[in-house]
Image 1 (cartoon, rainbow, N blue to C red):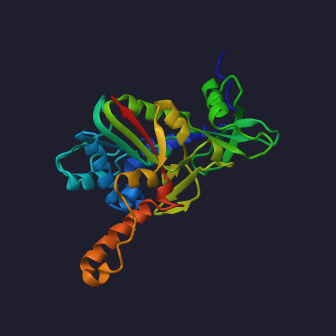
Image 2: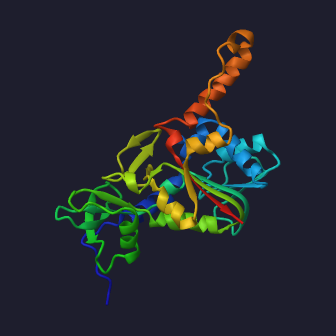
Image 3: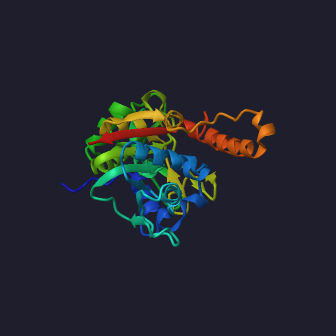
Length: 319
């Protein structure tokens, strides 16, 4: 029998989101992410230093950055440890002026012997969105890419909707049918994307760093949002802005047998400490005091409660 058309002509959120970010004129093909939002990479080179230490402590000599932007992290790593082999993976073309020693590709490598990091990549992996309607039925959400206007499609239990979506929701994000408007961002696409990455690591470590949540603290009305020119803007999947949603990090970790810790915990274990230098040093050695204070300030931002320190690291060891 022919497929039953949905009760709306608009694409699903996943379809519209994918086109907006990764289509022929997608946001990440045209725009430099750093022009629109700030990550740990831009906050301080201490983040790069921690990843270099993690790589070397594990006896590895390769670092692969997935969602490499314009090569900012890899450029910092190159300056810190020129002996590491570096590769950036990004849908955009190789940035002009990037150190020729840094490799660049638009496709995931077949195999990796080293450390793979994806900093704020999974939140940009498009996923389906579902919402509880006034009758308490969880339905697929569709969206007009030009305006951001939403409409509800089939219930999740409709035969045309993949059972994998229902299974994921039941296990990872059970929704209260008594709250019309309650939403689910179905993270199965993120789980699959990260499992693909981890499966390519023959020996080494895979680290996904992102903002996210666990089952006990899912956002009742979802977390879908957009950024452009450094500020949050209306969510419209038209390719002019980033579209992002928090990651269900516990589901990602379970898929790859990884463990989750906060960025605060991970960075402190790697020597990133926001403790301020002793004030007495300001008198005996002012230059050293100022230098150490600057480092401590950067470390404090990377590990801050209510900020970057609350990000999650999903870490998987392979081989």
